[in-house]
Image (cartoon, one colour):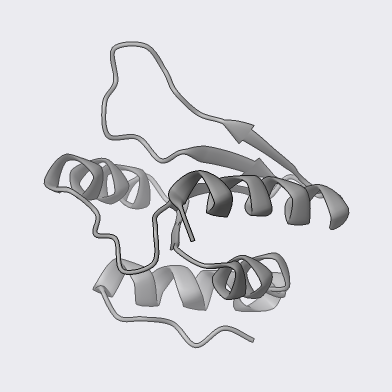
Length: 110
């Protein structure tokens, strides 16, 4: 699946679930995640879309670490299955998954 297809699928599934996936491309700030996802109730996530097997570059990794250090939720998604898991992630599991991601381990999605 191409990165743009993952991003489009994410946008569609988030909208179906009642959220809003906004393209995030601030001028002059390279390496930021592709999308800001806003959920009902005020939860905000940053999502980087990749092709299956794609890797996060050093600058992207640095930006993700910066966001996590400020308490932000950051996800890297590379397939339609991961999109469905992300969209279905219960809020009660969010902080646990974010801690696992910050440690660099792959979370089990509920």
